[in-house]
Image 1 (cartoon, protein in one colour):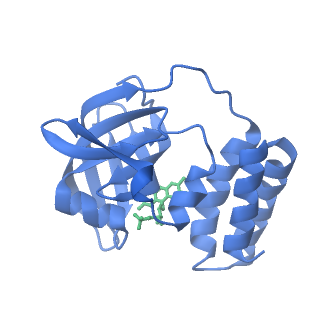
Image 2: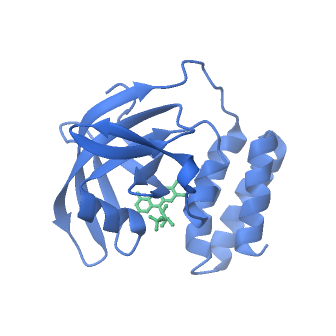
Length: 186
Ligand SMILES: Cc1cc2nc3c(=O)[nH]c(=O)nc-3n(C[C@H](O)[C@H](O)[C@H](O)COP(=O)(O)O)c2cc1C
């Protein structure tokens, strides 16, 4: 499972008819894990169907797109993995299919253990990223909080990343930046 390194890897998690950016936590001696907030469709689907695919993408725009809007049916492809029909992102450069087990529950979250069953490299080309790409991911994290809680501290972080996106990004990063500005009403 060479696709996941120690740390938190931000992927597009696909569950039944849904896609959303989610972090996969990898620590030594532990299975890969998700910490999912209650109330999202990703959480509901994982509890209901018991699978998720982690999709690695080089198009940064997909992070804000799936954080703030639904996946179209044509964005997803069916894949048979571990004896179950799952779905993955059509635009994935690579993907891993997991069966899921709920490890632990708190008032706000579920801890989910991931058992890898299949993985595939779809795109074998190296796709270099710029600083704007990473800032789109960071900015999207702050924006998902800012839309519920428009505090000045988050506004400052969003503007910081929008500046890097404008300076270092290519067309997809700049498009993501415009979308994030619009979503946040800035
Ligand atoms: C980069 C990134 C990582 C995220 N990681 C998580 C996570 O690990 N757990 C979680 O519950 N939400 C996470 N989120 C927030 C969800 O993507 C967000 O709540 C999303 O709207 C859920 O969509 P859904 O209702 O379609 O599942 C993350 C957001 C971003 C941008």
